[in-house]
Length: 150
Image (tube, rainbow, N blue to C red):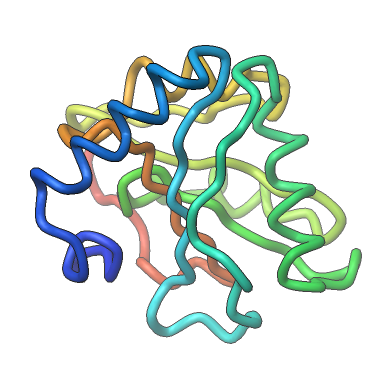
């Protein structure tokens, strides 16, 4: 996987300091970095850094991303946490409805689907990076391929 351009542009210590300041000043907000997958055919997002209310759901945040990239309702979007791949099979392919967006990810080689009603604060608590940011990547197709684990 390609390293986040945000990570390449900013050293770890700087990112840690920034996320620490953000969390101290806004304890009810989550620092999120959103970037387009390298080979994706959807538009670029106009900004990478977001300060998201802790009580925002995944579905609400996906709506924000869709609006920022001006993606039409009939186009599908995949959003990944930490660039991790979704699982294979009919289970995964059956989830690609054009009017809906899903957060698909794997963790410790186990597959999971985060329901769009999940709070971003729960995703952040579980998957935040060592620098204190939550990294999300979006794509108009399953750019990363499929996870071939169990």
